Length: 252
Image: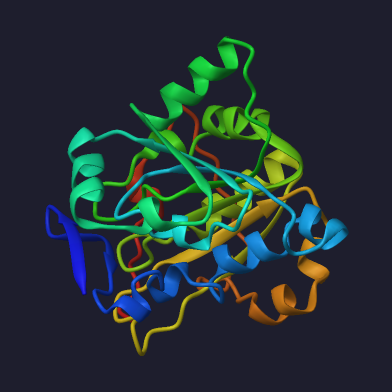
């Protein structure tokens, strides 16, 4: 496989064998929290599994999420670093060979989303993916009250917000619970177990106002306990956020 790394942190990889080239890594495959959320989004439950979705993704990486796109889907990537797009175009084929119609917008994801909203262009995403949290310096401005207000303004009714987070460094469970409570959302955690291709997996927090989503059998069976086994809640704002509040002090 070929992988993309930034500051020593994996940003995605792709198998080079022709028969596996469009198979994403385990944390992004059809059995991952994100894969299950896409397959069971309300439109697909109501109208059939081939119903097209509008999908937004903040963070391009190697473009692995594009492998989950189906015929008729529209994917909008938001990518801060032009060099990442250049690497994807030169060395990775997920975006080029994926079934969905894919577009990449360059710029800070939150700022571009803000400009779209100010221009009267809410995107009405069926699924909005935050895939920019890898490494030791997560973009904190994507996990504040003001950021969530923006994300929800871009979601379609019964839309899903999918957020990955790095458990080895940070324990974001209280923040996820706090944000869900603040905005009246259901949130579930879908942990990717280590093993096979998942030596360093990321996991997914899935937010939605679609209460029936977590009643779907495969969603219910895949849902994990919060790793901190707690009930505490935390809310960040643009004026008040602190990485020390989510440091994972566990020795595990």
